[in-house]
Structures are given as structure tokens and as C-alpha cells.
Amino acid sequence: MKHIPVMLKETIDLLNVKPDGIYIDATLGAGGHSFEIVKQLTTGRLIGFDKDYDALERTKKRLEAYSDKVTFVQGSYTQLAETLKTLKVEAVDGVLFDLGVSSPQFDDPERGFSYRYDARLDMRMDQTQALSAYEVVNEYSDTELIRIFKENAEERYAARIVKNIMSNRPVTTTFELVECIRAAYPAKDLKKGHPAKKVFQALRIEVNNEFEEAQSAIEQAINAVNVGGRVVVITFHSLEDRIVKNIFNKYGKPTKVNPRIPVIEEEVLDYKLVSKAIKASTSELETNNRAHSAILRGIERVK
View 1 (cartoon, rainbow, N blue to C red):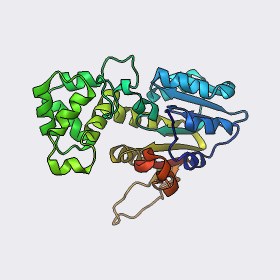
View 2 (cartoon, rainbow, N blue to C red):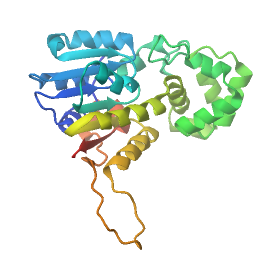
View 3 (cartoon, rainbow, N blue to C red):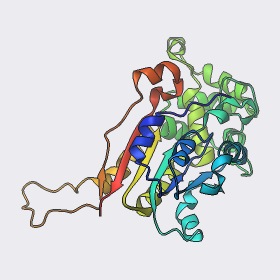
């Protein structure tokens, strides 16, 4: 399974790696970004998180030559602050989040993340957890499913899709779910791309509690960086990017005030935004399809 890290150069440049710094890759995945970070470290250290045991084991092998500089953590990045406390690390110099599912997870038919392969509904990043896409699709109420499809993916035909799911339960495999979705779409909209894309996104987010966990972890990361330290985040759809943008603006933009009220003392912020939304270059888009929807943002602690 060939893995091409998204916006690799732009991400590493934005992270501004120092040879003696402490960095966190909160989403190790296949280790593409981590490999570039550890190559630049001398006395520095990398702490890498991943829920997925298989991903962690693969990346351990990839980073074997730098094992003295890496601490691996199997678990959610929501454990970021707790882990730093356990490791007696007071602050770090940078944190990277590459949100969503890694390419190897998508490309493994047995994991059930992709509508391109027929497999049992699963979608768990942490395969030890009880909740999978099967339980969501077959045990949630119609009201809950409609809410998930709308809130997590803005699926316009959510009600029609859920009606088909309810009448075909149990829906066991990815292809069975695809048929429920396809049957709900008008013929004209079937020509606009794969109809299952949004529902699969919505289910994956629900199964892995992605929105809530990302929000918690990014806030922890912002509070964990040293002065000059940066938090850098790659997102892959508008709902993810909105969460990141809102958090970054909360810390890095001044509070809006009524223009009619005189400002007695200018607000001094602890953080600054270090980039607008960065998108992949034309040359990368030609070779890395996953980069098409990617957006990169960064924030830095300044005091």
C-alpha cells in the first residue's frame, strides 16, 4: 500500500522543526510526516499517537532507525495532556494533526472504511472498541441516523437513505449499505460522484467520535506548546476545517468589540495565526488524489 503524505513540505515547514525540540505527531498513521520530523532531530524527541495497533506497529518499523528519539503511544490523541504529564514533559515545541482516516486504513478492504470494497461494516480506528458501523447502522433509531448523516456530512437525502436502511435491516456489509444509499438518490445526482461518500464519512465520524475528540485534543495541544511552538492541522472536509478554524480564531484573533465603545486597553493575545488556509500545489494534486480536499492551518504561541 503506497502512502503519500499530504502537503509534506508545507506541513514540515509550517511546523518549524528545531533539532532539539519536542514534537507530537498526534495522528501517526503511516508515519510519513513523522519520518520527516525525526530526520531533523538531534537531541530532540517525537511522541507519536495512534489508536490503531496495526498502524502503530507498521510505523515503529518505518522509524526503527530513529527509535531512540521516538515514544509511541497507542491511544486517542485526547490523552495528549495526560500523556505529557506521565512522561514529565512540561511543554512541547510543536504538534501535528493529520485528521481523518489514513490511506492504509482506507485501502484495507477488511476495515470497512471504503465503499469501494465489499466488507463487513466496521470503520473502527481502534479495533478493540465495541462500537462499529454495524451497530450504528442497525441499532440506532431512524431519527439518530438522520441527524448523524446531516450533522456529520450534510447529506441532503438523509431521510430517504435512512428509510431504505430501516427496511433492509440487518445491513451487514459495505455494499449492502451502498445499495440502500444508491436507491435513495435521484438518477441525475448519481452522475455527480459516488453517492455513498457522505454517508460513509458520517458513519466513520460517529464510530470514532472524531469531531469531539479532535476539538478536545487540539485545545490540549494549543495549551501544551512552548512560546514559539506551533500547532499544525490538516483537514479533509469543510466540517473538520470549520472546527479547526473556530478553535484557532478563538486563540489567535482579538475579541470582536462594539465599534461604538472606546477601547481603553488593547487586547494582547498569547497566540497568533501563522497561516491562512493552505492548499496542495498543482503538482501535488497531479500525483496525490487525497490532497484535493486537504487544508493546512497553523497557530503559534507568542507569549
